[in-house]
Image (cartoon, rainbow, N blue to C red; front, side):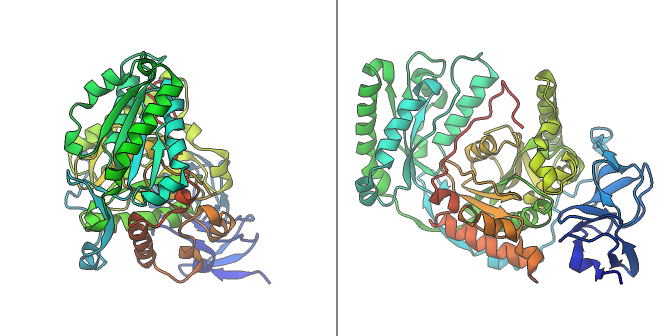
Length: 522
């Protein structure tokens, strides 16, 4: 007798116009699945996280998930596994007739939650003198170039590793160095401009309470250049000091001088206290890494629903990873509130593709073996699932990499899928909290902003539990709604924003890596 199941116990259909389902568990060959009053006989063994056809999909017809096409059928039978052999890639020509695309400028999400309950939520944050709000209180040692990064790191590490200082200054979350590999030995122009913008917006970030800038002295981005670029920083209400290694006479003297400056600033940096603040001051950066089939089914939708709630309360969010928007452009364009934003978005994607072509790099390189192992088939399907972490609210702006946000709501930032570079850019753009989904167990963190890790499956949560914060796999394993689970994640966001350490903070995963214009990171 053949094994028989109703589809809901065995697989997931993301949209009522989809012609594929995703298996929740391994499905044996010849299993009979009942769906919409009909029977589907499974043609092949279907591993967990892989797709099978709900109907016959004739050659040339579109293969759809999330209500959007991700492939063209090469001839697929009902119940047959969907893979790279029986579909061809589907590429949208979204630039054709773009002016005719309909947009709902009032927003497209349904307010099916208690908005007052969300609006009244608060967290314990650091209110800066210019009105910006931080979730952490870091003192930053910032090298102007690769030439001074080692000295900057030595200064910061020697102080951050001092347990007596930690016990004395309990309101300071750490003394950290933004060591990087840029700033000299390269052509001027976009490479230097992007570095300067990233450094400036990292300096003014509300999670930073004071800054010591360190240069070598002869590099392109020395202190004189930085000082001129930064302009007056008094408006940000934090001390900014400068030292030059060559002017001081070398590494040892710069190290000692730098320590003295920082030590003299810590008392004031420690004087600020957390206070209760509305969640409208939260700016959520959204990220996915080491994705699998369930990233776009559990973790990313849970993040997206949480982002919607924060935006509904007057907050903001940033979604980046341009390669993981390609293939899902139409879905995003329909949510953009003006023709101006659409134009900026199209130009941003075109910039990325042009850079890839110049460097002879394929955007498809963003699709890695781990994605395929996790059940994803191609980069378009990956993109359709990836953008769900941006929720359903209107898109209010499109930013350059590390450009600071201008409006409340959801902004897109042009940037790479590379985890560390993407995190650095979104933080420079203003994110004071990161929600990071992962299918296989990515473990990265950020230098100055807490990162909450959200695995898509319970087995990954258990396997890499020491690095994970929130189990989105419960959406599959328990009888729990997306809305309820996102409320639980919102509570965790509030707790972490108020000082509870995320797992990446526990392990001091303090990454800082700038996306340079001279290469294409995917």
